[in-house]
Image (cartoon, rainbow, N blue to C red; front, side, top):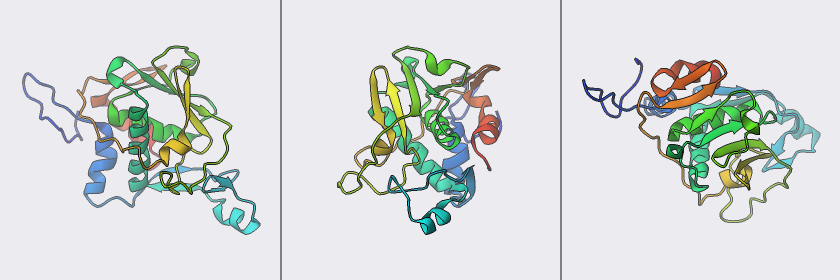
Length: 224
């Protein structure tokens, strides 16, 4: 378990606490690396401005470029999503799991995985996990919803990175584009985790917090 800055230093009787997201986002930003590009995505098929599809050919050409997010924006968007999940009543300690429908784009999946690790929420990537009908399953999926007007004081013009994506918990579904841009929802602080805390479930096995750093670097972030 190298490469970690522990919140509580390990001792002979205590394994200490850590968080892989802190190593990938918070600490590098504190050291002056906020502008490093760490997450990339394909050019959007339908460019959007303030949640609305662009029709001007010149704007379409200007916006039809691969997406590049620096470390500061990845931290901002993932910590806001973690705050949204907390506001919706997600309690990681209860055994809740986050999973993704197949129609969720890679960029949203990556931000979702980072948001979950930030608060110690298990991400379930096993085949068929999104089809489980259990009350503690948190599912990100595509939705059909009208663009959110940024005119209200509580809704920021900030790009959410979750346009057309919803989150369902039990029988309740929320529009993540709206929730992510709502200024009343607080950002979530990074949570200290036991190194043996399970963070990711895959078909190849489970990943614990203390052994997951390389996985987040190579499987979640595009460039770190």
